[in-house]
Length: 140
Ligand code: T46
Image (cartoon, rainbow, N blue to C red; front, side, top):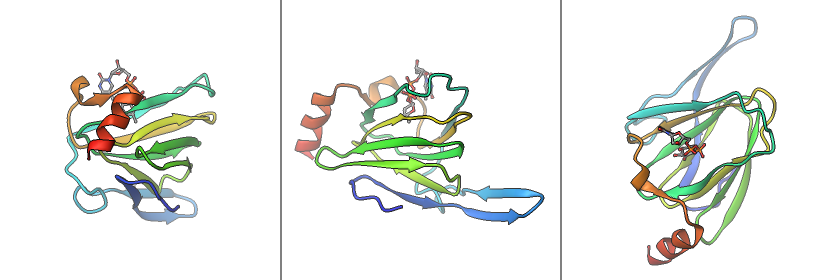
């Protein structure tokens, strides 16, 4: 996976794979994940595969996103460049840095998304208007 937008990046977890006993994935804060983790959340039970989640950017929050099961399309936009990625491998995560517009769509059956976040939930950190987002990215 190659990421070309700004404020993002690929994370490769350490994995211990056993052919019969299963796969184990390790994410250590400040090692695999380039920030201290204050919150985790996960999304499952998506019934409408064609829905779109996200569709916003954050002002300061840093996040790392993983697809633990199934697959989905992650669309990224740094205000200049746009990129679509298919997340389907739990070993490979994506950094969602500040000022990166992101949305998730095209969910598969049994899709499970895990997100590690650098801070607690704060509505004032969201940029929900795309024109505001473009203004902010122009200033930076
Ligand atoms: C993001 C993408 C990738 C909370 O109360 N606490 C939380 O920690 C979170 C994440 C959400 N909520 C509430 C806020 C809404 O009332 O849960 C509801 C659904 O959240 P939202 O519509 O923001 O869900 P997504 O999937 O559109 O966005 C989420 C994160 O909120 C967001 O930070 O970057 O996943």
